[in-house]
Amino acid sequence: MVVCVLEEMRIRSLGVIDDAVVELSPGFTAVTGETGAGKTMVVTSLGLLLGGRADAALVRIGARNAVVEGRIAVPEGSPAVVRAEEAGAELDEGTLLVSRTVSAEGRSRAHLGGRSVPVGLLAELADDLVAVHGQSDQQGLLKLSRQRQALDRYAGYAVAVPLGTYAEAYRRLRTVTAELEEITTRARERAQEADMLRFGLEEIAAVEPRAGEDAELAEEAERLGHAEALASAAAVAHAALAGNPEDPEGVDAGTLVAGAQRALEAVRAHDAALAALTDRIGEIGILLRDVAGELAGYADDLDADPLRLAAVEERRAALNALTRKYGENVAEVLAWAERSAARLTALEGDDERIGELTAERDALRAELGVLAQELSEARAEAAERFAAAVTEELASLAMPHARVSFDIRQTEDPDGVEVNGRTVAYGPSGADEVELLLAPHPGAPPRPIAKGASGGELSRVMLAVEVVFAGTDPVPTYLFDEVDAGVGGKAAVEIGRRLARLAKKAQVVVVTHLPQVAAFADRQLLVEKTSDGSVTRSGVKVLEGEDRVRELSRMLAGQEDSETARAHAEELLAAARADV
Image (cartoon, rainbow, N blue to C red; front, side, top):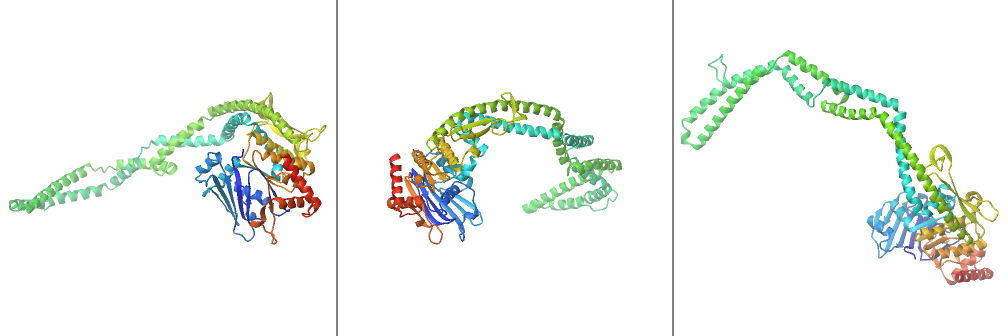
């Protein structure tokens, strides 16, 4: 049962396509057309909708940008819907609208449900919505890493759980090893750093600076350096306020204010305003006496001792020696000392830390060996089932005598981890090298598919692998770009039949040049250019009845009106309908 369906794509200014709409449906859809007509642009467009890399070269010459819009029917509550709604996207009556714009300068924008989103989000959704396979994917299947990933995907939780634990331990081992290497290889540099910090801390400790001491000493030095001028000024001010004992007839501020107060006291009872002024003058007199007393005390307390000044300047010089090296002021010097003490403690603990890290590294390597062995055993068990299932599928794809198997091996490495009593190389995915082998006929030795499979055989192996995945880890939509490359005759018929069966469980879209495959499709789309070499809205159309027979005839013999080709095309369609 298909839970998500790619219903429609509109493509504008992409490659040879000017403006076209590709209407899709559940089941099996075949996309056909002359070579160079733009069939592959369907795959390219879907790749863009699913977060693929943007390329300015895809933009049609003369256009400012290329735009691909897609409409996907998604059920409420599906993982794709949940993730889209988290990003702020809105559904339109159970339909998710996706668009991608690529400018002629190479800039790219993505929209999901009417909301601008990162392109990476489209790639996330792709994992739950569509599996795209083209000729590049066939070449990817030749890589050992892709073959291991395929096996791990098939194995499911049996591999995923220990692999997750292994990956976490592997990352920790990398961290521990890097730290251990950093400590041991930079031992001389770290010793030099420790000596420098130790010298600085000892220099600061010898001076024993106190927070705020530099500001206090600066104030005291300023006062002691001008002691005589300060004392003289205080004496003159005191005399002006309180009088000079050596000049009893002199007039001072206190005497004048007191006289003013006495003059007003005699008449204050006659006017409240004047009484208030009299009180204020009395307050002034009190304030003058207080200030005069403080000035007298200031002059008496002023220390003009040159020895004290020398001591202050000597202390300031000691503090300045620290601030020149360790901070702008004493507060920064103390902060430097605190940080350096912590760093020195860490550096002086290197020997102990090396021991701890070495022990942890050895423990992690032993743990990785156990986990790698568990992974290898899980992969071996899954490999037997996977190989048997793919072999069975190949029998349905006109390769009845082919046998698929996996070679799971490890490589000796003295710096590796111990697995089954051997010290072997290891990596982020375990210690296994996984290689897919194919024996195409009885008596043939199993060989790596990179060496033992022709182009047509590789296409069928990839299709068989995907069909097996569809039974264990399905996605709603499969899109194949010329998966039938290098195939013909009976093998092509079997591929068409297998794709039709896969379409009973998922939406299948196939770009094909083989009539034997197209005949099995529930729906056939024709992509054709106009006279100016572009594909327009009328250039992508659904073929039915006579039109479909004509297209299959062209694909068979290159002659749409050949009676023989037409008869063969009708026979293909009839056989496909009867088979499915």
